[in-house]
Length: 360
Ligand code: G6P
Image (spheres, rainbow, N blue to C red):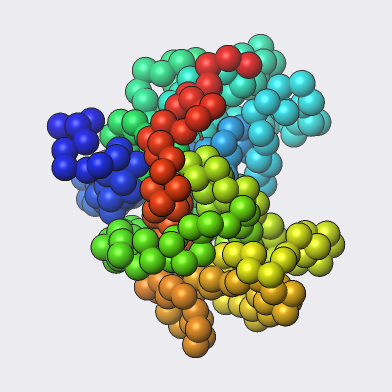
């Protein structure tokens, strides 16, 4: 049964472990009879007709949206804006002529997102919901739905829904690219399978993750995540996971922004988790690590095969550069999980938080 904890102490750990299977299940669910990746024809038409996409989401789903923008723009070459639902609700930007709205929501019930959807429908614009819950409000009220096929997510802190959102948006992007005659230059299906295997290596490395949590996060008040490009967005998600369940004050920053203020917060021993999976900015992010280390920070570098340097705390298996977020988020989830355990926090039901926020 999908929603039994079984031998797991927490739903969160079970859901983290499910991620390789979730990615593989998504590939299967989005394959046609010739095993080619596909999405429904009417969704594809809507994507092809749009001159700009507006992604609307909250929380972890918003962080997935930031990476979704990268996927859609790089593969399908459609401009994308990503907005926090609660902000968009009362501060709508000027819209393009043929907008398509994409609502990303694990539950399909988030009130802030629903309010935007209602407004968008009043204006007569098409909407697509990407959700884990078939028949949810956001799914019923949108014109189109793509499902995450992640299975029920019970832990308040979202894990497998996030990786599922990334995988589905990658598929949506590559299928749209193909329909538009754009050659993305790689086989997404194959690269997603490689990523699923890479996720497996991370969930199999729990002892190491526990060591990192103990070494860096057992007693600290705060923790910073830095990265550039998609690593920055994954850092935002890593920081959210950590604060949600361990109550450590955690913030994600773009590497280049550090010197414009944040670096003032670095003290002796402040943990800084740096993601270094992007070749084009590898030297820059390593420069940032040196800057914080020189001011006393205790850096933990998470890099990838091919870009690794001596002293990196964790080296991820090599995956396609666009898909690194699907893999690099896994150690961040696990490190947060073990940090929360060390600090005796209620991992599955953190204080003050709800799984889905159905009020404004
Ligand atoms: C709540 C949850 C988060 C989640 C957010 C958006 O705040 O605690 O984990 O990311 O809602 O939820 P949704 O279901 O719309 O993805």
